[in-house]
Structure formats: C-alpha cells, structure tokens
Length: 164
Image (tube, rainbow, N blue to C red):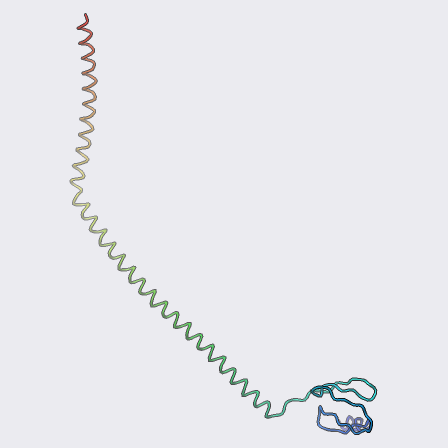
C-alpha cells in the first residue's frame, strides 16, 4: 500500500481519501467526471476510479428505509392474506346455507314421495279393477266382432235362400 502511495506521489498526485483525486501539479489538465468515477490525465487518457462506499449514516438511513418499506410490504401481504381468509370464510358460510336449503328441499321431496307411494298403494285395488274391466271389455269386444261376423254370414245365407 505504501508503494502505491509513493508511486502516486511520484506522478504528481498527493495521497488523499480513496476515490478523490487531488491535483498538485501546476498546469495539469486533470478533470474529474461526474461522481468522480472518470478523469482525464495530462495525456488525454481517461482513467477510472474506484467507487467509494457510502458513509455509515447513509447506510443506517438506507437500512431504516429498507426495513420501513419491508414492513409496509409485509403488512400489505398479511392484510391480503387476511382478506383472502375472510373471503373463504364467507364463501364457506354461504355454501353451508346453500347446503341447508338443499337438505330441506331433499327432505320435502322425500316426504312427498312417501305420500305419493302411500296414495298409489291405496289406489292399487281400484287400478286392479280397472285392469280387469279392461280385459273384460276386450273380451266382450272380440265376442261382438265374432257375433257380427256370424250375423253377416247368416244374413248372406238368408238372402241366398230367399232368392231361391
């Protein structure tokens, strides 16, 4: 490190704080660029300087700012999560109410179905009588067709005998 400082002194520069160039030569055309990152020496060659670290108070302020912003961010995330859980809770309550309504409807349907089955059972003897009557009517109808056919044959024979 001492050798670097001696070399710097040998070229006409004084050792100063890191990142800051001092001009000790008369007529030297060194220009410091924006932020001290570049400068031009006597020969028109640009050289770069090492960036300096911010001082302790700046780091403390930056840390405080970072923690404040992180706190706000985390509070926002937690608030969003809480809101999501509240929404889920409300959806679960509504779903539970909907299922209760559906249960009541199913119970009513079951009760009505049992009533209909009882009524059907009480009407079953009458339905059986209707089926028997229908069978008898069908048999009577067939007998009537046979009788009609027989009467037509008799009529034809009678007309045939009458013509003779």
